[in-house]
Length: 197
Image (tube, rainbow, N blue to C red; front, top):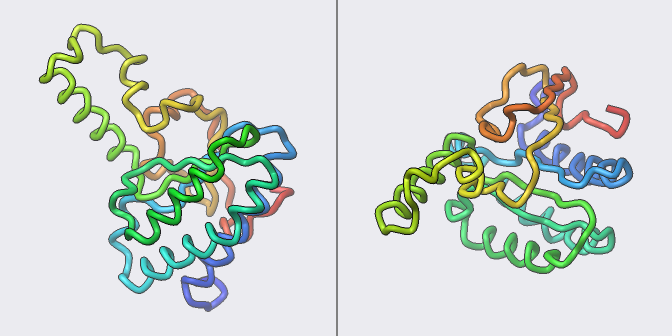
């Protein structure tokens, strides 16, 4: 949007439209899990008006897309500190997750109020709590146990990370899970991303 001299929200709106095309293409390619980094914990530092616009856009997109996702057998899951989301957004999101929970096709995972550091900190906090209460023997801690405490324990590690916009960093995304992932960096901005990309 900035490149085209438009309000930043216009870029977010176009980015939301791109999600539909990426989900459709992923289904056609036989991808089983697609995770989209939709809103990071750092995004809470953006201007208030932009955050409100993003939350409104998220609510509208969920309302508009849930039935289409269901028709296409897509299951929706969310990772991140969703308790930080506005209550109305959280409620709408969880209603959609519940509605789509029985679907068996592509699993679409939205990372909302998410960061890799938040996830690792949360996992350590849970392990320490379980150890303190006697549910966990610290000698049992290994990489498999750590994975079980992560918010992504239900899914395989990513085979491919696509980073748009010419950035050559992973931006605090799935820090543990990306250990053996292929990384692909493209100069294409997310709002311009299409099926051919």
